[in-house]
Image 1: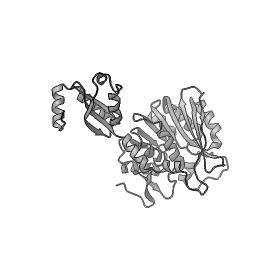
Image 2: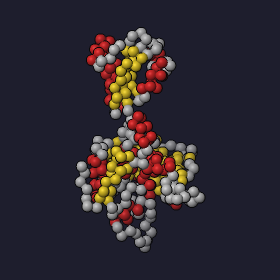
Image 3: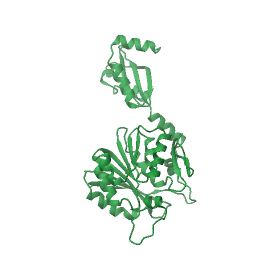
Image 4: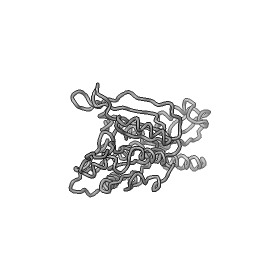
Length: 343
């Protein structure tokens, strides 16, 4: 169990399976981070390397990691907040998937590498610091909100340096700075492709924008999505927003089903065996019997599924398939008999 400091508590982020350590005297998880994580995870894949810049207590990576098996590098300048993220990672047993780094995001390309990431996610400080401007006296909040340690152009430049060709940057920011964001993206080889505005209540102006930009691609094809309204008239969250913030039983069942992978064995019409891999046993069997499953089974229909094994890791299921296929008939019969399969 992670050790909590006097001013800390454990909250849940999206799912009851994801815990996060937060301090009472600094920023907790906000809708900004949740929206960023939700839209970015929809484009992330299991084999992605993702860097989370200005990561705070790791909320974005913790949320996203629930939906995939990508590897995340979190970069946070403030030592205490980075330490919270480290302990949250340990709390969720994600040490093999999320690494937390305590340094200024300006140093990220040199310390973590250039041209190596499939995705950058960033919830940067929103506000400039004009001369004479009074900032929050709380240093933690001041650094999180104001461009003290890094500014908008620098964070976009860093993102571009770290991305592979065609890699994606997802940024959440204020609409008042959208023109600057587009300008700096184009200056640093990033082409904005998708902009999602958010409004608090119907009829109001947008107060948040999410930007997806792609490295080294054409500048055409920008999609400006319809506003997403966050609150009802009474201040409660809209149903779709509630589902983004907190997992529903229906979404949980869907996620658990999507997160399962299977090795399976078929008995073909000619008596031969076929080993395969899928994330949907019923659909895969239907495809085989429709002649669309595999070249081998197409001429040996109908086929019957006689055995399967379940895995949480896609790679393990694929290894099991490879292992089964590279044995002879006598070995396969012995294997099936040992697993009480009548064929």
